[in-house]
Structure formats: C-alpha cells, structure tokens
Image 1: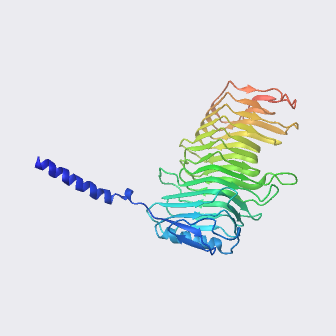
Image 2 (image 1 turned 45 degrees about the vertical axis):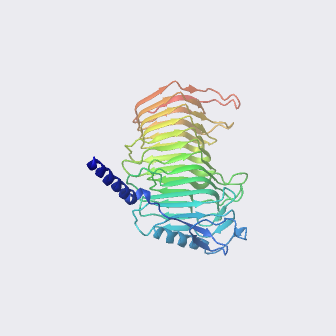
Image 3 (image 1 turned 135 degrees about the vertical axis):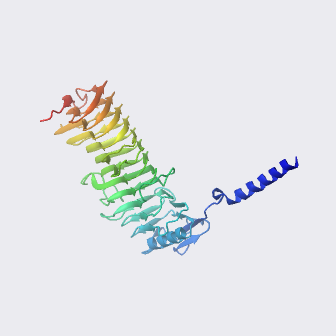
Length: 416
C-alpha cells in the first residue's frame, strides 16, 4: 500500500512539474501600437479609447514610419502586436512596413483592426501595408476598415510575402470586413493590385469588397487587379467581390506539385475583363471547389490551366463582351462542370462567343448545365481524352432580345 501511495505522490509531482514546463501553457505577451493623445504612435500594454484624438483627420507626414517602428520594436521583443485604428480618416503617404529581421521560432500574431468599414478610412498614396517575413510561423489578421487609393498609381494596397513551401496546419493570414474603393464612383485612382499575397498557408479572404471606377465617361474595367495569390496553399475566397477591375482573382503557382485546396465560394467578379485565373504548369495535388459565384467578365470568365480535381458548380457566367469565352480549360485533369448557367443579355450580337472551351485535358465531365449564350456552346479543342458531355440544356433563342443562341451546340476541332 505504501508503495502505491509513493508512486501516486511521485506521479503527482511529475504532473505539476510538466504543467509548469509545458510551452502550451505560456502565452505570448500582447502589446498595442496605438494613437496617443499627442498623435504619436505609442507602445501600450493595454488598450486606450480609440476616439481620444482631437482631430477628425490624421495628417502626419511620418505616421507610417511611426507605425512601422512601433511594430518592429514589438516584433523584435518576441511579443504579439495589435495596431488599433481609430474611427478617423488617416492620410498615409507611405505604406506601413513590417520587415521581420529575426528568424524567430516562436509564433507571432499581428492584428491590424479598424473601428469598422467607413468608420476608419485610410487614404493610401503608395499602398497600405508592405510586409515581409522570414518565418512561416505567423498569423496576420487585417480587418474592419476602408482603404482608398489616393492617387492614380498607388502601388499595391496590401502586400504580404511569406516564404513559400513547408507544412503548416493553420491559417497564416485572415483578411476580412474590408472595403477598397475610390473616393467616389468616377474616381480613377486604383491600386495596381489591391491584395497581393505570396506564400500564405490557408489564407482566408472573407467579406472583402474591392471596386474600381464605374459610371459614364469612365474607362471600365480599370487596369488594376483585385486579388493575386501566389504559391498560397489552400486559399479560400468567400463572400467577397471585385467590381470594374481588369482581373478579379489570380491564383498562381510555378511549383510542382502546386498548392492544393483552393476554394472560391459565393463571391462576385463583375464588370472585369478576366474573372478568375488559376494557373500552374503542372499540379498533381487536388485543387478544390469553385461554387456559387457570379462571374461577369468581358473576355474570360474562368481560366483554368494545369490543375487537377476541380469541381465547378452552381456558378452564373454572364458577359456583355464582344469576344468572350465564359470558361477556358487548358491542360487540366479530372474536372467536374455541373449546374452552371452561361448567359448573354445584350441585344447586340457579339463577334464571337464560346461558353466552354476545353483543350489538352483529360477526364472532363460536363453535365446538367444551361447554355444561354450566342456562338458555340462547347468547343472541343485538340488533345482531349475522355471528355464526357451529357444532359445539358442548350437554349435556341433569348425570349427577350430574340437573339439566336448556341448556333453550334458542340464543336469539335480537327487537327490539320
């Protein structure tokens, strides 16, 4: 009995020691970079009221340098950092720069949080943030404010670089509840790329709305891009939108295998030249889902190259372009295209139109779609294997415009 009691006492002591040594019980300190009453960025151990500033518009020439320096001090101190933005208009002449200088093994959490869309307004002349990290052990969250490009060539709005590769079972970036827009509907000021991210693991973009200029006497779409994700593993874009820009979403990779698991869900890409572009030279990893989106593109709605295991379903493809391809597949394998609508509302007949074009691809299943555009419904290009087409609906005439649709339902190209 005494031996059993001794063992219990020893085990209890060991458990207590392990509890103190377990790194999971140690929480990193969180430090705030905040606007003090003198409009200087101050390092705080706890929060202060966000509306303590007297001025409604913050217009300080070195404000971005102050923020950058504050965040650098915090990161170098091995602490997490929160930048809290007040419900003010902030003129940012230069971007906030986050440059990790120490390859720390500890996790870093960086949060930049506004007081709400249209409550916090950032007027950015050369982009809002430019961040470069040496480690993948990072979590960045940016949310709840409006960014307005302050000049025609305003650079990248949000630019983040994380070393590509590795293996992480976490989200490294969360971008949510953001609005990126011009000062007014006719404002021609746009970012070259509104959100430009490289190397992120499981990035989540949710409720992010980006709009270029629109209305009479305005070039439309504008030359900028909304979302560019390079070498990002399992990115997710959900409940977001891109209006009146050249390109809605680009997901790019030059690695083999390419990053897997993309999801583009319940989003809108409207009045763009290219809606969604997903490109890789050769990807052997499964790629994901494109579902429940509204894609209104003048040239190409969806361009898919070099991908494997894609499900494309329940999307509305819509165009007013004069020469368009709703969906272009090149060099893909095992793609399911089902329950989509391909629509053309104009009264003027386009020069050329193709709803789906497939080339250099294997095991493509096109089923139960509605084709309601003029031109060619399904264009079978060269070098396809096992292209299965069944149970689709090809409309013959638009009941409102009386335009003839699907003059050629299925066209098969012949090698010369």
